[in-house]
Image 1 (cartoon, helix red, strand yellow):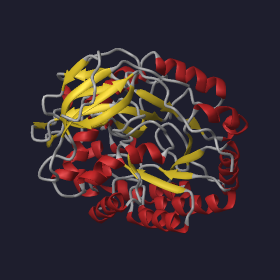
Image 2 (cartoon, rainbow, N blue to C red):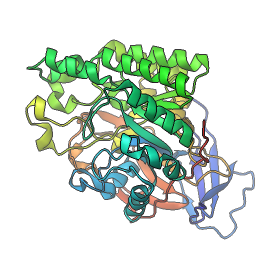
Image 3 (cartoon, one colour):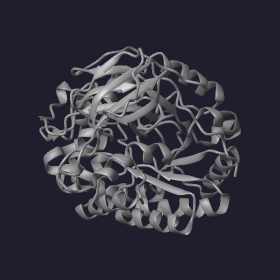
Length: 454
């Protein structure tokens, strides 16, 4: 499907990364009909023609971010977020495209259901979007029909918010084989259901301080091991969402070295937090898979640096604060963070945890490539005219009540960050400026590569 947009000439933006990481150039960027048509250093005669001009005023420019994993809970549970608030939050975080997982009814288990969901989102989203199909027993016969409309099929191997896990290995093999035949990758929540149940039985009176023991390191590692074996058996392509453990990193790294079609991503919560933050955050730390030890956090940062982890995806999963403050056993899992994706990513650069080029790549071009999304994530001719303009020096304290998410809480409350987007452009249209949304809907379904049956 051809997508278009306005034309715009962006004048005088500074190249990324800023000092002290690199010497900067001043750039002009020409966007024609929503796509980048030219990028050139100022003074090299990139013609403006009669295009409208945006003076970047020396702000640093990067491509719009691609968040490969969000839950906006819409349709069905709009009171928790919805596309109106979720897409506004994305722009606040520098995100111009998301891939969304529906983990509450109505699930996308047929082509008709997926078409209805896409039509629903189209009238509400301010950003471009992909809607994942659900990989469950009821959707197997519909996967081939759904494949042209979705980047991937989401499978919950372990039970989490809204969906139960899978105990039967043969049933899991059937799902992997069906996805392979349909030609779309599987994106998986990898926790072994049997071990999750054992962990719950072993810690009947757990608090959030034991959440990483209830949902253990072993539960993730064994699920990833089983999934990689199924990739070998069925020829399926696998992407492990929200990787949280050092052992999981090693399995994914080995599979990639072997040449298997296995990839992975993680989220900012696993890169900044650990189980030791339970006393400070309480149930705000409760997410699935669990946030584990400082050693796991270090392994994830290293895996992001060396390319074992291809992408950053927030797993933005908001719940009202009153629900999170229930007793541990009844508090839902998940936290919001799409509102802060670029400031948190830039913080990894500022603190020396990631090389600036690597950090940007993991939430732009690398993120798009990890789910085979063409046309997104590069500041180059032919790519969508998605830009983020930010000041790398100006800092601001995170105040959750001021963020666009409906939840109005954040595990990063009070953190002093920089890199907050000042202007965001989606396919040539200025959609965020001066701290507020500048558009209504206008997001379009992401371009997809054709299905590749295996």
